[in-house]
Length: 321
Image 1 (spheres, one colour):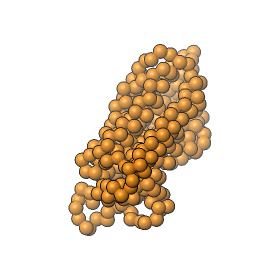
Image 2 (cartoon, one colour):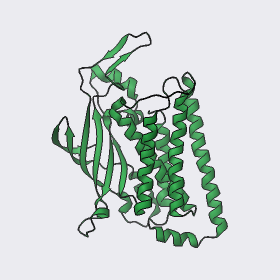
Image 3 (cartoon, one colour):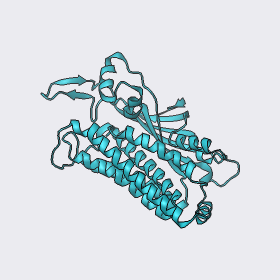
Image 4 (cartoon, one colour):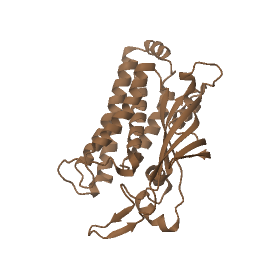
């Protein structure tokens, strides 16, 4: 579901920026040496500080969501809801992306607070997964939605992708990224698109599944040990969809059962992409401001040429976005 995506994205941006501001190096050894030079009371103070802002940030955003979104819908007893067939699973991939990046940002904060790499990863990943689980719990008491086990599975996948790489390699060789653009709809579909995805650009970028792609970005030099490859060069596999004007089908009905929208003639289909990318964290700089910008940019896939597989055909695209 999309209603909490904007809150999470803004929270992620703040935390993503913190990764390169508060951590002196991506090297575990250098970080350990750095933390060993700090007094114990300084590290304790940092841990209390991070714990406090995490509770305040997570708690505040949940209260905001409850007041701004859920309050407008009827409450029911706890119930489940199987939405696994909706939106060609674009929403599930979005859940995984959110869990991955929330876990990554929170882990960076705990490293700054002086926890060991392993403890930071476990606590950060658990925090990211738990936060999204609480949001799912709010869904479970809303008449419009419900507790979704597919959502939980997607959240777990995202947090696990981050944690497994940190525990196995001590770095993120495969990063979860996002890319979107403003899609222009023809007049006969514009009203429906506005109903589903909103009219403003920020809403469209976060809600319009027809205009989003989500990517697994592989750092080539991490897997192929050669000086011939630049350290920042990635190869990304992307997933997207087209023709989505409803969760399961391109029809809509009002509360009385009257059909209000019917475009079953429009094909709903998946798209797979292969495209180069940039790992901004591999670009070396000593300027904190630049590192901050690079850290934030790294959750976004760089628009680039791509091969696209859809409807059984492969075609080239000058710019993937």
